[in-house]
Structure formats: structure tokens, C-alpha cells
Amino acid sequence: MFWAATILYLVIGTWLAVDVQYLQGDALSRVSATRAVLFSRDPHLAAIGFVFTPLTALAQLPVVALSEWWPQITRWGLSGVLMSAPFMAGAVVQIHGIAADRGCPTWLRWAVTATFALHPMILYYGANGMSEAPFLMLLCWALRRLIRWFTTDDVHDLVFAGLALALAYLARYDALAAAAAATALVVAVVWFRRGDPRAALLDGIVVALPTALAFAVWAATSWLITGQALQQFSSQYGNAAILDQSGGGSDGGAAALAFSVAEIIGLAPALVLLLPVVAVLAGRRRDPEPLAAVILLAVLGFATLAYFRGLTFPFLRFYLCAVPLLAVTVVFLAPRAGQP
Image 1: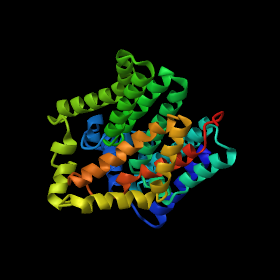
Image 2: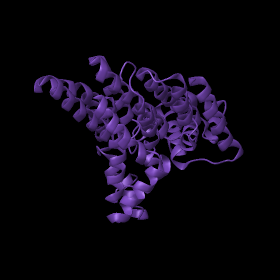
Image 3: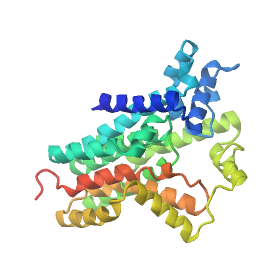
């Protein structure tokens, strides 16, 4: 499954880059940053830059190193495609794993997996070299581990969920919202189950600590090298400066909220119908697993709030978490194996 999805996204990405010559500016900027690390006049790791988190560029280093002998790798942004394709294939594997862990019927498991893998926006972002592919894969990994934790109560699931969220932060800043939601969820569930605030706090720390460390180390490194801890907000090349120059943010109000809702519905139209159904079914079954989807809802909520406050651009990709959210919502329609 992983290799089939990877090859599919690679073929689409290569076709877009070489034949159609459709290249995403954000993806090319990561390729440029990676090349600067290896082949600039002063090659050094800090040349990767600190405006954006580094995972997307770091993952391309081994492939970009080959561009001295095969320049098309960077000329056509193929190193980005070679990065995003396996990451998005990993997201497909995680969605399939969530359905398998729940004990869904084989036909439903494969139907959900195929529908997710072949969603037009999943195909596109698996093929274009942008940060959405690693971000979605890591969020789906964290989601799968959180869902498993509800059944196993195993601290190892919390550890891996925390690590996945920390790596997701190194792909996109939006992961901070997911990490905060996951931490709050774990604290609330443990407190409710055991009535022990100390145990709840400790389990919450297990989930939150990796992301907190990733945030602190990345900010401290940026401050030591550039004098600015959060360049995304303070740098002349950061998001805030670009918004100020372009006037790309919203003016707030009902129109901004309507835009965000329209983006989410456009990506996953059935969510409006299925989320209430899953909530009712979970209540009747006393099934806590659907609560884990709060990490995806948190990312969508963050994107909606950021656009409402004029802090970001009206880009469809900021709401891409609606697609895996719809996939797992369909999975939650089926009872866990052994439940009535």
C-alpha cells in the first residue's frame, strides 16, 4: 500500500513539474533553502532559514545532494516531490491503520483508505512538494496513537503521540493547536477515569513535552543565530510582514467565518452530516475513541480563528485536515470490534 501510494504521487508530481511545468512557489523556496545548506558560497546548516519550520527542507537534504550530478532534481523541484510523496503515502497507511485497529470490515477499511488516498487535494499535496504532506502524515500518526491509548491505556501510545506532534510542529506551526488539544484531552480523560489530578498532569506532560521541547529548541536556535526567536512573526520575510505588504488577510466578521466554513465543506462535504451522527453513536456506545479527533478539529479551529483575525491568507490548504477528519469520522460510524 505504501509503495503503491508513493509511486502514484511521484508520477503525478513528476508530470506536474516536468510536463505541465506547474511549480509551487512555497515548495521551491524549501528546495532553495536546502540547496543553500549544501551548495551556497558559505554552506552551513543554518542557511536553511528560520522563517519556516525545518522538517520539509531537512527531509530533502539527501536528494538535493545528488543535484550536482542530476540538476533536474532541483531545477524542476523534484526533490520536493520525492519528499511529499512518501509522507502522504504514510498518511494513507495511518488512515488504513486506524480503520484496522478499530476492527472495521475489510470492505469499509479499503473504501475509506482509497477514498482518502484518491481525494483530489490529497493527490495534489502528495505530489507538489509542500509541507502539507508531512504535516498530515504526522497528525494522522498522532491521532492513531491517541485512539489506541483510549483502549490500551499504555503510556507508550502517549509517548509516540507526543513525538508525532513534535515532528508535526517542525513541519507546520499549526501543530501547536493540535498538541494543546491533545494535552487537554489526555488530562481530562485521565482525571475523569482515575480521579487523580497528579496522574492526569503527568500523562499530559508526556504528550506535551516533546512539542514544548521542539518549540523551545527551534526558537532558541533562531534567537542565537539571528537575534529573533520567532521569525515567522518578527522577520521582514515572515508571515506578518507579507500580510502587511500584500493586504492578504481578512477584515474579520461573518464573511471571514463563512469563508472558512465554505473551505471545510468544500473539502469534506459530508462532515456536516456525519459529525453529529458519530457524536450520538459514541454517546450511545459509551465509546471515547472519537474524542481523539479533537486534534484535527483544533487545527481547523486555529485556521478559522487565524483567518478571522486577519493573521493568515485565504488558502484552501490551511483547512486540509478536514479530509482525514472525514475519513476517521466514517471509521467511527462502525462500532469497535466486540462492541454491540
